[in-house]
Image (cartoon, rainbow, N blue to C red; front, side, top):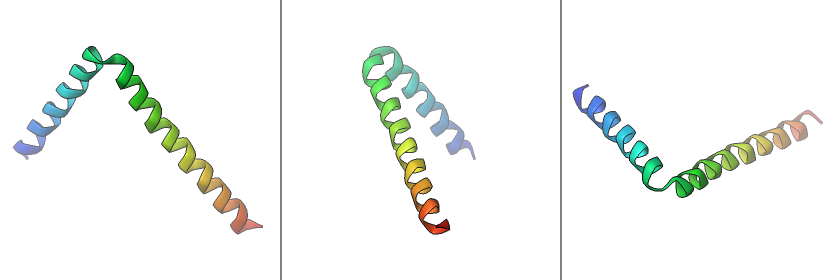
Length: 53
């Protein structure tokens, strides 16, 4: 359990460091993640539309 907590704190610290040192790249990474989520949701919608027709 202790290792998981330490890894979580290190990951959060890295994200904060990355946001402050490279904000443009961090924004691009977040946009990429959201684009992937939206694309996946669209693909699921197409799948269910085709299944229900």
